[in-house]
Image (cartoon, rainbow, N blue to C red; front, side, top):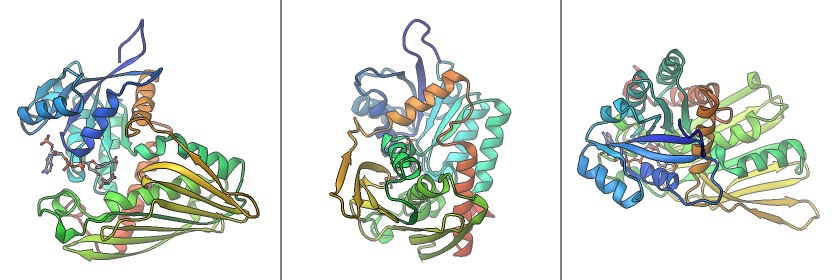
Length: 354
Ligand SMILES: NC(=O)C1=CN([C@@H]2O[C@H](COP(=O)(O)OP(=O)(O)OC[C@H]3O[C@@H](n4cnc5c(N)ncnc54)[C@H](OP(=O)(O)O)[C@@H]3O)[C@@H](O)[C@H]2O)C=CC1
Ligand SMILES: O=C1OC[C@@H](O)[C@H](O)[C@H]1O
């Protein structure tokens, strides 16, 4: 991290030039009013130099990074402070270990890894190296998430929460996808739970796990999966928060697009709906209190909204933190263990589990 006389500057190395990396870099270079940090893309690693060049030309044309035809080039580049990993799930552990062992900070796309065992490995490596590491669950950094927590946990606008429904579903049936797509190929970590179901788990966490009266020891889990080609195409998880007398009903499907209002939180005084393009990208809340006019609050998000997590990461690195308070290591591990449990109960194994 540099920038003594100006705004702090974080120098990013990008690994993998696919869809998510394209969204992420376009937000890093987004023109913003009064940004708290400067983000610089100084290196890109791709399967080919020409792909890396085309990626930057299209998504971050103002950047002038070194382009490598390997990921190792990024790990070794002395100008890189932090490596952003935008590869398929099954490669996260290898890529994170490569970057950590080279002494780089790491922001790794969700799901952190395939299973909790792999997550433990990278957390342990980051701890030993003393580098920052975070799972890029960008959704948790949207201002709407903390606004919602204030409404539900502090202002208690809907009273006692009894049920939380969350759905993240996309119209991408497994059989319709190319055989080598990361969303179809089990060797790349395909399946609804790890790809989109984890966002439903994320909202349950924001609303119920992080509820001030929750007792994490007293949460029962049950689930069911519809498996196709060896991976889950439809997954449903029921969480019973006994200390809160509240339940979460979490669903993810690859068979049809879910509704714009992807979450409904029911309380003793009314309900809150969360809406947006998808459960990963929330944009508005609708508050419906009994006998009161409905109130909608929109949250204007510049670009995709990745700068919220990027700024938080830059701030942690400036402060010398190795983990982030909004997405701490223990939370990544807890969610990974929960997903292992759900998979185990439904007989869904990845090659990495053996
Ligand atoms: N936060 C969010 O909202 C989102 C997060 N994601 C997460 O990001 C990760 C990547 O997803 P996405 O960008 O959609 O995936 P893509 O398939 O679009 O891109 C993945 C990139 O990884 C690299 N790669 C390395 N090895 C392989 C391999 N064996 N097969 C395919 N690609 C490989 C390639 O880059 P290159 O050739 O340049 O090396 C490829 O372009 C996933 O873990 C996913 O969960 C995805 C979408 C949204
Ligand atoms: O994280 C994600 O959010 C958006 C989805 O389109 C994508 O499949 C998933 O990886």
